[in-house]
Length: 152
Ligand code: HEM
Image (cartoon, rainbow, N blue to C red; front, side, top):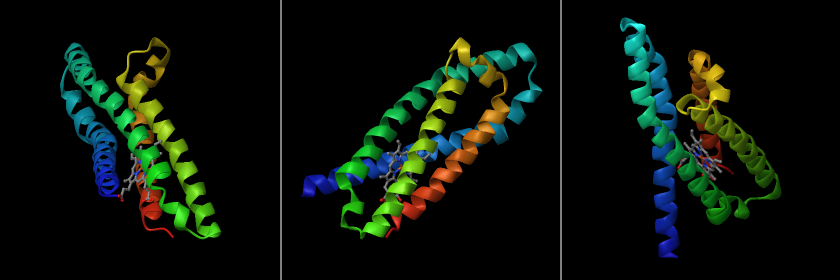
């Protein structure tokens, strides 16, 4: 029981740290880095961009693994919903389903922006738009997660 409790805490900490990064870094990029780098000329911008993405991409991949591992462990292992009444259980599952779909969207956009796939170069050219979408999806997930946390 104590090991289970410790695991639950560690999973929660890792999940929250990843959430802070997954939302905080795109906000920093969109509202601080992107406007600031306008002061550089195009070749300098390209060098800076590649140097940043080469490092950030590692965080993105690690975060995706951490989200999936800690999220599904909390959902299926800790499974607070098992003690809920059927109505609350239904609402919990509905919200977590929506949250997982949004999370998958976030994983895709983050990987596309940080990655090097030629097929997704169009998204990187429209980075401003996609970072906006990423931030909005992230905020939506925080809203849903806050509700889940205090259910039923
Ligand atoms: C497939 C991916 C994910 C799964 C399966 C998942 C699952 C979960 C579960 C089961 C909880 C606990 C809810 C409760 O208290 O009953 C939770 C909490 C939370 N999740 Fe996720 N999650 C995922 C991705 C994300 C992402 C991408 C973010 C943010 C960008 C995020 C942010 C949070 C936050 C802020 C909490 C609240 C933590 C707390 O109050 O202790 N999750 N998640």
